[in-house]
Structures are given as C-alpha cells and as structure tokens.
Image (cartoon, rainbow, N blue to C red):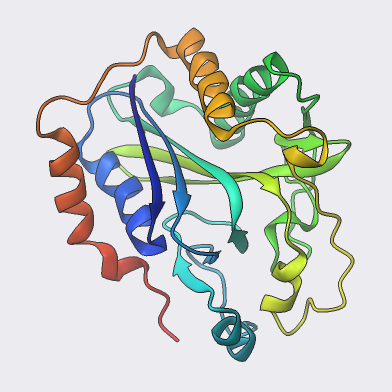
Length: 243
C-alpha cells in the first residue's frame, strides 16, 4: 500500500488526483486530503439544476463534479480519504457493497482505536434528497446513529476508487446549496461533536488501521508525486462543474 497526504488543494485538482492515481498506480493507494475552500461536490450523474447558484456565488463556495456517483457533499471542516484498488489486486473483483463494508470496517476500527464510538449502519438503498448526509446509505459509518462519513465509488477496467468525507465539524449550509432542501430536516454530526482530536492523530489512526489489512505503507518513489500531479493537472477541466 502506498500512502500520500495532500492538504488544501483546489477541488477539481483533488478529484483529478484521485483519478490520476487510479490510472498510474499498480498498488493499493491510500490518500488523505483537505480542500482549499468550502467545495460542493456533485455525484458523477447528479442533476445540478437544483443548485442555488446565487447562494453558492455569494458564499464563495467552489463546485466540482466527482468521478464517483452519489449525492452532493459540502467539503469543509473534514478529512477526506480515497482508496484506489488496481485491477491486479485480489479485491478488484469484490462486489460494490462488499467493498464498502470492508473499507468502512477498516475506518471504524481506526476511529474506535482513538475513542470515537462510530459504527457501520445498514442504511438506505434509495436517495432521499440531493444531499448525501441526509441519511446513511448501506454500510456507511455513523456516530450516535447519524451519518458522519459519506463515501462513493467508481469502477473502471483499470481500478476501483472509493473516496469519502470524514466530517469533523458539520455545516448546515449544505441545505442552502439547493433550492429544494432549504427547509429540509437534515441531522448533521461530526467527529468533533463527540471529542476534538488533532487531524494528524485521526489520519495516523486511520493509516494504521489500513496497514493492518494491506501491510505497511510505502513511501512514494522518486518522481511519483510529480507524475501524479502532472497527470492530474491535465484532467482538472473534467471535474469543474459546468453550469
């Protein structure tokens, strides 16, 4: 397993990096990252017609299109993770929900190790609104029975990408980002609603949990970071939301 952290990157570049890693790596790849500014990400096929563009503009939020499916997430005070499984790995043939369950279990174990009483929930099969965090989906992670981590997957012939938002501080501004959700009851919670721990402590605990399953993390090879960023820069335009 290869490990990388990239903090405070622009939204479209964050999405492009996930895809670039998938196209370049021949090993399982774990990345943690954050966002340059609050960013609304839409699922690959999500209809953006409901977005309140005036609110987004006045708030200074960025908007990107994810390579994965699912519903909208407002990335703000969070730690985002991505896991890339190459086609050469045994897990590549794992079914969608089975892989969700496996990766959620690894994340739950890591957070439990540092005192966060999160757990996997059965969740719902069908979307309820445009907002990812209104209700948990199957095999997602909850704190006090409220969804605290929202994840999404995409699969190609070369790799599987699963990435997700580990909420530290929830923001109900997500409701204002869509015309249809402004008065919706969306229960929101973050890890810091329970106890505040440094982000690097959370990242280390999660990395250690992934290492228990995938083996000790390897450092990037010489030139590998530059190769990823160069390829990602060439794909950034694919993930800029086009009105």
